[in-house]
Image (cartoon, rainbow, N blue to C red; front, side, top):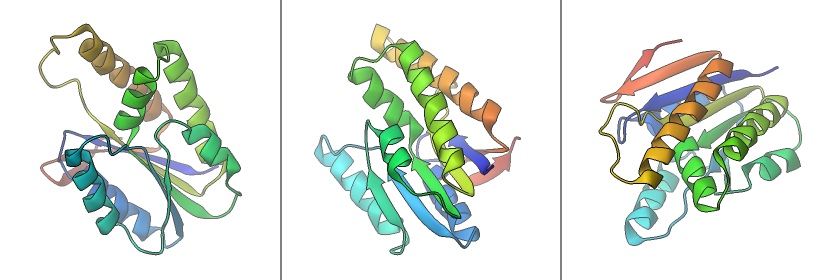
Length: 172
């Protein structure tokens, strides 16, 4: 069974950089699963910056919705899988019309598949519960569901880091 590491924190707290640092430390082949979609110029720029920051030897799978299917297609070997980011993935599933129950079920299935297919799994997610209460029903649904999904993943995780201003704090 593989090691599961969850990296959480606020926006621009250094989560992705820290996840990449951890992935490199395993000195194994890295599969990077990217869930972002370039739906506007800002996201195109952010995605471009993320791509530049990745090790050139890593295999990148860009999959905003079908993460489970993509993971299941991979062979099993001694590698590290980095999923960046769970927050965008949850947003994509909500916008695709999935229910909260279906989203939670999908995340549980992905966790099982990732653990079967790798030596180590690193998942990046945003901590969304420390901010203001969203003023829209969809915003509140997203925040609440993201909190539940983060609890599911952190409950399964061997190790959880909270990134604060670029500093990792081990909380589990």
